[in-house]
Image (cartoon, rainbow, N blue to C red):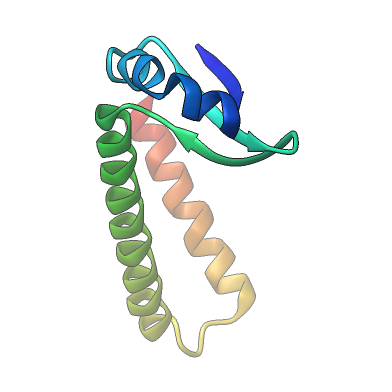
Length: 98
């Protein structure tokens, strides 16, 4: 469950809040003057998020490299030729899935 907590209350209840977060019962949005400043999540959630970020970054690096390689192969093609290649690939995917 996601909860909001001010910094003053957080200081007063830190031990209980850390335990609740550690046990996975709560996630806290820490606010000062009713404005969100930070989030307190469990270590497992943090590690999952870090893994997601690494995987996402690796995917976009792969995508960029693939796009660059494809761009090198497609130099000189007209827009119509590129669209025709894309349509052909789409049709192949649809026929393989069907």
